[in-house]
Image (cartoon, rainbow, N blue to C red; front, side, top):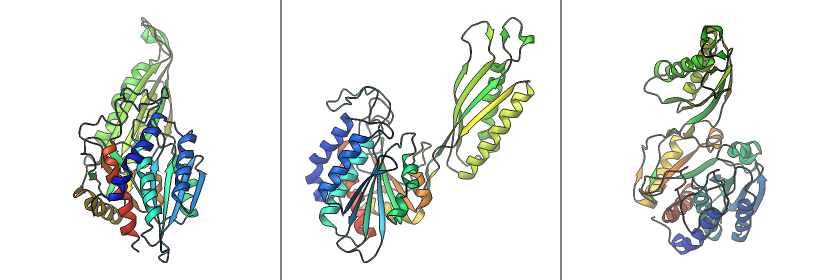
Length: 388
């Protein structure tokens, strides 16, 4: 089954939804306009149940098949929020909101799932129930976790969950996936090194936190190079270095470092946190300084279940004619991981075109030519997973 004809018919309508979302981006949980439009459309489609306010501003639509004897329930998820960036595309449908932009394609994801929901509500050629999930705050707000903690999965007895994300560099409408770790965990740390400041001409009278910070930056690289298994992926990056002075001749009293830790292995993630705490404490002590560390665990590893991944790949192959089944993992993070921690499922990459700007870039735009393939994947997945 290639692209479903219905999505060719609906393409212009779905593109109009997508471009409207793009023109009116909203951040984190403040997606009230977007969520309201999503809920209104789900009601117009004839969904059996539409619930707003799950995970603060998430929206859920429930569609029963023509038969429900199987009792099975699967969830399909899309994210709705934008990024705090200034758009530089010059497009006619560019963002109208200063400092906000759909630079990750969530406008496309939301529109694709809406298109699939409209088709599924029209046809209902499946045995069971589909729950379409529209999530806020993927970009750093853990909206997926908020929806789970608000009872999303248990309230509707969702057994499996599936989602997609666009992928610049992959031809539009093609698919890529892999079993196991597809996307990384992402943690953040803030280290405050406290020394004793003074005049740069009298370094013997101070405890220089800049020197300590320099040793920390180097030592933290040993977590990946000397503590981690070299065949596994781990990245420790110090991205900010700031002192409490900007003078050329004052040794500061404090220095702040901020960074990120990313891994595709949960055990390696634990190891990195332990080693970073040890390195920070011992390095500061060696120089007579003190150090405080704030370590914040972010999104977990996005872990595709093997069976569901094979199934999702088979559907993608049916839709697009081929699929990359062993795509290399990416060290970006995604909070669909929280749903995959609680239920088996799969996350797939949908090609956004080989000439597309990368996500999180001010020149990025979602490729509307990928919409029929994305809609068809969701719809075909339901009809195959819940056969009537």
